[in-house]
Image 1: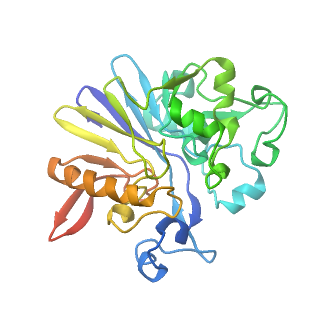
Image 2: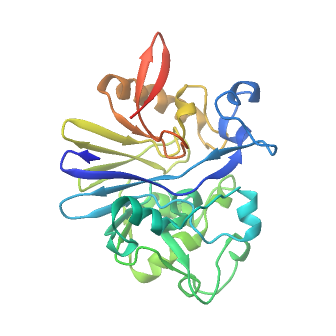
Length: 292
């Protein structure tokens, strides 16, 4: 779609599954299963909706999905159902190849947002089970977007290098270290703007995750990242158990959702399966995402 002078496209990566209870925190299953029916392992289906923005000067990719470096065991554990490589989806939707991307933006470096930053090199596979290896990451993984600058906040990068005990499993160095070694990784401020896209650090899901916003043509496009991962999480009490600071996630939702409703924002739900792009409608205190 055209968004002001920019071309914007959503690039779905692949379906995967996480525990439904973890995704809905204190909300009981008898309530959340009405909107997200779980499988026999209590997992709910999600996607990774990366966003391509083409400006007059740059071809930008916001997030890169879960990646393709997973072992058979990990693929089964996360219920990954990949129909085609991300590069094929990118070409089919935008007409461009990974080599054409000039900027990659990661709101944070969890594996389901930054896993597609890199691909396996011919000489080996780097994964969570080999994270203690002393082999250089560049010998095992290579940047998927070899001509791109990779942007991530310096605070998030510092946290990824020394993660919290609760989110350590979400940070896999093979998703950012190869670009550090090639010189493509650029640490950015906690809040910055590139080509009209504003990145803002919002404490909640973690201390250093960012949301993003693009204002163009009198419209606003807003990416919640993991603060509101799916349409079902629009309701204030629906907060993922993965969030390190759930009370602050709630404060964010109470601040940002009324503004999104009032100003008619186009909202991106990164993990939504059916309708990642919506506007929010409020009627009698009930919030409803309206598919665009």
